[in-house]
Image (cartoon, rainbow over all chains, first blue to last red; front, side, top):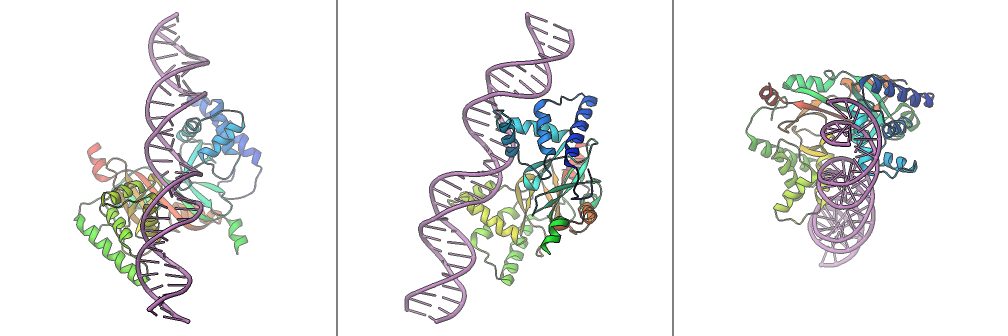
Length: 159
Length: 159
DNA sequence: TAAGCCATGTGACAATATAACATTTCACCA
DNA sequence: TGGTGAAATGTTATATTGTCACATGGCTTA
C-alpha cells in the first residue's frame, strides 16, 4: 500500500496483506486475534475512509451478530492498542493502519470532499510539536497529527 | 502570557488581557461580543486546563442562567471561529487562546497529570504534516497538532 | 476438578453534540 | 416612526459517541 498518496491500487491486496500482517504479529506476540477482532480489522481495511464505532457495529450486525456497543469498542481498543488501527480524533472514527510494522506515530491527511484518509509515518520528536515540546521542556508520550483539506484529485476537480 | 511554558504567572492578567484583546478585535471586525460570549471566554480564560462544553454549561447555570446545551456550543463556536478559543480534539474540550492576534494554527501540549494545556504557535505548512502533505500533493486547510505527555513540573516530580 | 484469566454477551446509562423551531433584540432605513 | 431583516438567544427534543457493571463462556494450568 502506498504511504505517500491517494493513489489507486488493488484494494483486495490491502485487505489480505493487512490481515496477514496482523495475524503474524499476534502469533509472535502471543495476542489473541479472535474472530471479532479479525472481522473488525477486515471491515476497516475494506474502506479507505474512516469508520465510526457505530458504523462498525452496524456491519457486525449485518453479519448476523447481535452486537452491543462494547463489542465494537473492545475490538477497536485492541486494534488501536496494538497498532493495527488508528483513531482519528478529528472525526471520532477509526481507520486501519497502512503499515505492517508494529507501533509508530502516524500523521493523517483527511480529504473533506471524498472523505479518504491517508496515513503517513512521522517522527514523534520531529515537526512543530517536537519543536514546541523541546522549547517547553515537555515530555511527549503520544501525538495527534491530523490535517484536513483536499486530496490531489479533489483539489484538481475543484479548480 | 508566556507562549513557551507551563510557567507560573499572574493569572488575573491572563483574564483581563484576553478579554480586552477580544473586545478590541470584535470592535474592529464588527463582531458582537455579547454577554454570553464574553462570559464563556472569561470562564475559559480562568483556567489553564481545557473545559468541556458541559463544564461551561454548568458554570453558566451557576451564574443563574437556565442555559441549555446549544447556548454553550454557540458561544464556543463563535469563540473558536474567530480565534479566541480553540478546540482540543483529543479531549473534546476547549481552551482560551493564548495569543492576542487573530487566526492562527496552534499546537497543544497536554499534560496528562496536571491537565494543563499549553498552546504554541506553528506554521501550518511546516512540520511532519506539511512534509506529508507536500509529498502527497494534499492541500491543507486546517491542522490538528496535539501532544500528550508530561509537563516539566510533572515530569520532574515523577522522576 | 478447581481456580484464574481472558474474551464475549448484555442491559443500562453517561457524555458529547446537533436539529428544529420560537422568540427577542437591535441596527438600519424607507 | 415604525417596519423589516439579520443575528442572537431560548427551548424542546433527539442524535451520536462512549462507558460501566455484571453475567457467561471457554480455555489453561495447577
